Length: 223
Image 1 (tube, helix red, strand yellow):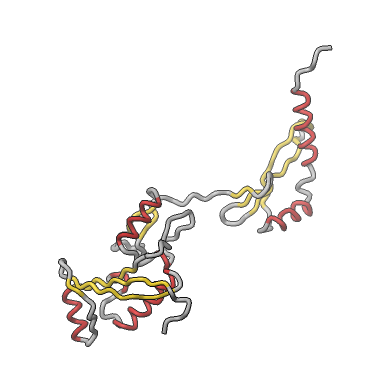
Image 2 (image 1 turned 135 degrees about the vertical axis):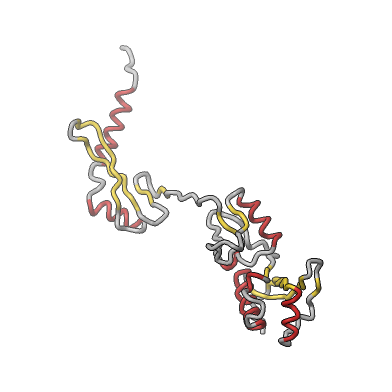
């Protein structure tokens, strides 16, 4: 029974080799909608409904396993699912192993590869690392450090660093900076930790020093 929110229609395509199709008939498994293609493979189209492509894929796998019980082998070898609503698209967070990005038809694979601008390529079905993905990343994802404030930054793993300023012993006017790792994982907590540990105690000296530098660099006006 279709749920109220399962309103989006997806089309499953099954490409079944000639001999395997007749083994299904022998097991009393009939696909009346199957048609023989030019490459001696039967192609069957089945409608599946879901509230997203990910849900459509989940339901398609459940249906495939229940319907054929291993007679056609693994689903990824014979089954593809279309992307009629353009839900599969490339961005910085694209994950090849996400279920919503699997079982892609050739048209969708070509489109997403074009969108990736060289970051993605078709997955080799014979690859030992293949997790039944349709795509693989051929360029490493760029990991960017997030600048929370002028002195606080956060790495992609979530670690926050504070750029602490402190005077150099040999010269009272010069300042040096040191990145200090914090235990906090949020900006609010990091600000409290900086204050609690006194990491910002030399900031006012650094600021006054830069102000004095600007004043001293001005050209004196002749009397």
